Image (cartoon, rainbow, N blue to C red; front, top):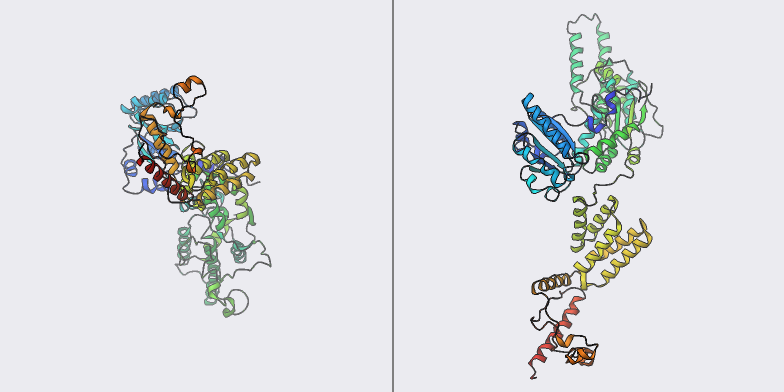
Length: 607
């Protein structure tokens, strides 16, 4: 029968749903909200549910927290998605909440996923029912509630910010999923409570050796902590011989002790590699484990979905109750078998105790139990029989699974604007490496490269300006290259422009001057153009004095009409543009100061 045919009905439920935490103690991450003494945890444990908005990226536990709050308060849990629901569905949920309160004397928690997709009218539909206590409203959103939700709803619900999960949290979820025989990926038919079948010590030794087969990469033991079961087995062994009626002579007892020592050595080797047991024997390379956590990008749901797919592609390592031959090109790990094992004298059986799997766990492997956890020969058989066939998630397998996966990026959402803000600020801060990073993040996340090209043009004018006018030309050229070449070829031109802009001399003098000018124009209204600056294409206009007394700059010394007035007559001259002492603006500043001196000299002359 195939492995798929043996799956239980629960295995058809996605792993992410099966592994959803059932208590606060199972929740990983979000310690800023759920650590002892924090307000949210205290409210949950004290059975004081309140309306809330859970704001955070996908896969951080928003839905899970809502379910746990409902369970802790013994409330009815109603779940709606703002993508599909409307006002009619909200009214139906309110009616059900009233019925529950009347007939069951308990409250109702109405959970709205993607609540930011509700319009103002739909959001307002909650308000009276939240106020009169008919239901407790909990919304989940990936968007900033300040922009996505109306003020009336925000004033009635407390906002909690959920953070992406850290790598250590995600790795803990991997361990939990691969070691759980009921909800996870461990084989429930091979748990320690099944009837063990005998297995030879040599097969067990080869099983331990197979953990380092296939190159230099190490495998990590994945399985529940069964040290307690091993200890129980040992106590049972002691009880069987407590009455001293076994009838064996001294030689038999010595031989039995030697055999037990050999089995104990094999058990210690097994513990060092796999732990006391690993139901289903699903192993994962350390590098693959870390890559999986990194690829999840703080998203627990993505992590478990990738892990489930990788588990289906895991490759067999050892056949059931048989040792897989180890390639002669691979170094065979030494397994300490105890006194009197193998051929030769005791002194030759373990020439270097530091190389023994029994005395020292292999690099990259974490023992499931404490190093001094005792095991007996009988528990070795139980553990080995329970392990069954070994399957391995290799680094190469995981790379195939995560190929094409993208990082968190939501065009038009908070992540989008946060990342373009980070790119702009990195360019402004003359940090080319950081600017390249944020550029790559946006491109990798699926941002339109032409949008980035337009923003680079803006940066060239706003933050570099006349300190290096070439920046604007380079940004325009990069935009043109992206339009002509497309992706991925044109993206290199964007990277080139980004590095140049970040490295160029900076000036926001033009940007500040422009903003100040706009402010004056909006304040002072439509002031008349001075008559001497007006165009005079007709005789009537000339007769009205248009253009009269205008001084043609090219006819003046140095092509500058010193003292000429160019502002409206009703407005005092202003100095908007004030060049900085960086880049080309150093020379621009020097010239403008020289021209200002000529103006002052012209004003001092008698007319």
